[in-house]
Figure: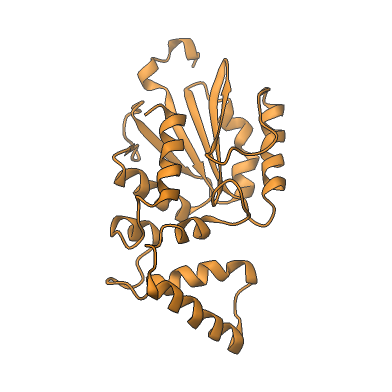
Length: 223
């Protein structure tokens, strides 16, 4: 369909994420801040953000060019883990955007979340978990939402280190995952998934890092 025939209020605002946990964290954070999320089978609404689980970083990057060509797309957010090398991840996104015709891509990520205007192309936003500045992943971001001075967070870390000394059963990069889920197991409703932990306020949706993320969402999607 020619974009000229698509009404402004039918243009999509789409946020691509790596996996299920990313989807649910974004869903619950946005909802806690009064931002509407487009549910499955709902009619497109420019005031709602559509969150798409791309089921893995390889699939997200591999289909990004196609996503950018969507004739009904107005804004495209890209949320990925920085993992162990933030600059390497940034360059992989840079290359895709350059090959898709974007010319005003900064050399490094904006600490507040990057937004790239594309003139006759969709606006593109990039958020590298956890905070656009350091290596890490979704769980590092969620650890920033743990209430300040939470004694159980410290205790969970200590217990985890004792367990590691006895028998480490996960790779070192996943230590933060084990820490976060150990802490969640000790809450009023033990073992809640991290998305629901935001709605339950075990994780603080108004913590500074959450507020920064939401501000990026509002700017990118013009909410």
